[in-house]
Image 1 (cartoon, each protein chain N blue to C red):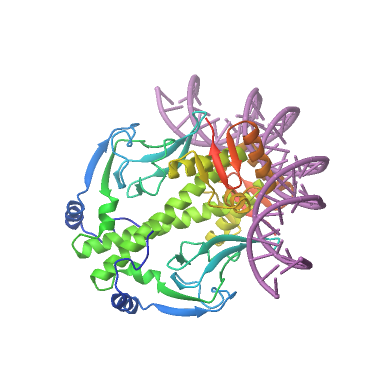
Image 2: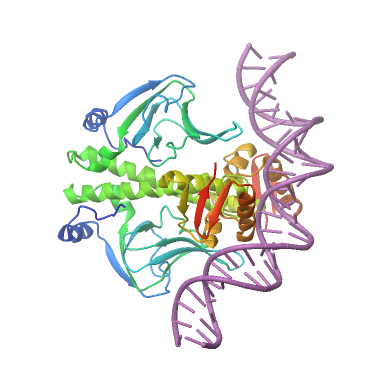
Length: 209
Length: 209
DNA sequence: ATGCTTGTGTTGCATTTGCAACTTTTATAA
DNA sequence: TTATAAAAGTTGCAAATGCAACACAAGCAT
């Protein structure tokens, strides 16, 4: 798992943050980050606590876009946080380091070894993000509920090198990930079982044949 | 628009590629890149020509995942090119530079200024990629055809600062981007017009109200 | 233990959607 | 120009899906 400060010592970390003119802000539980920070191009690093990126739809329903934990990053630039529907909320008291993204890109920093490590770590994290998003797009672009489920299951099976695996999500979350109605999903899972394509027992899924 | 060699001179570019142990390969029109390169963790930079990332579904239908042009990058790591359904095809005679992704991440290169510029450019490109993917996920996760269309239209309108704009896609491509049936999409567009929510004339869309 | 919340499992029903099969229009190439 | 291909526009219909409304189980906190 990539981390933005990987291979960077504590002292170097603070030197780096100073060079980058980073600021560390404290947010108490259930407060909005976007209420306090400008929507400029920032990268936020969750130093402690936990936050959620959420979307509020026209009905007022809240959709959790992502759950971030210590060490995770988010960005007002490449997340859709410029969009009015989106917000980011501290789920616990949290400390967040903000770094100016344009300043990173401007390249007028010293070429310190830890700065270069920081860049490499950022690339690694972004690579993981791109990969996760590609995987999600890959399932979301399937037309039917059945195809979405099977694509997701086969991917998990391939990743875990076994035909039998445990879901990372609960069923409610899986429906949200696949962006389908939960009850319709349950119905389709039953059909997959009736058709002897899968077997399930709780969160354990087994791909047959 | 970001470019991987931005702010890097021609001489420096070749020095950099040598340091990174990059190789440049030639692919003639309509040949598969994955047939010739290993599926190791590579970043490919399209030096000249054009390539497409495609997915072949179980019916044998080919879905174009992305169209790459000069300067664009792709990766066997964070695209889904490890997936058997995916392939990457030269649409014209093309020259492609391959760089080992793990080698970039290993950080055991010299701290030359052009190497740092390269890293920064890579971050910028990946940032754009993440943003584009987030935008697509944002529309794909809408439940109905109408919501998908309106979300897409409102985004375009906001981006272009006008209620009247020209589609970047043709309607066939738009349906593919939204992952919906084209005829169903056309039907819904007609309903949006009937309901006086939009007006269209060719690729020109006007949002009413 | 008791209540409360969250997740699972199910069903009926109206609506939406994909699909197939067309025609017409617009581009593109010979 | 004329063929040819690609895109736009329609429609009927069966199937899939979302939604609402449940019952029930599991987890959690007081």
